[in-house]
Image 1 (tube, rainbow, N blue to C red):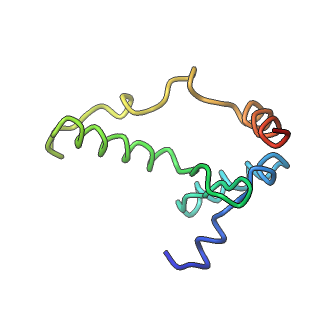
Image 2 (cartoon, rainbow, N blue to C red; image 1 turned 180 degrees about the vertical axis):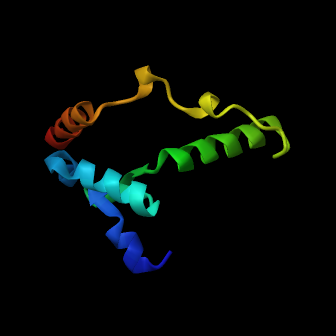
Length: 101
């Protein structure tokens, strides 16, 4: 990935809290590039597509279990449960609380 794209795919916690989360999610869905979330100019998190997340979890499991790629696992095994998921409103509240810290 070229350096200009890296900077284009960075967003601050405060920008996410100001309603930019929908734009970021839409961009991730459209072009598949991850976004780096920065706080105080330091990378803190990465937002990736669900497909990329599933692929990473599969790769992690294969490495942890020494599985061969031919051993297919169910995709549902990698999708976070509803309990671990946040709605856009919940994420906005969380981000606003992070900003005030």
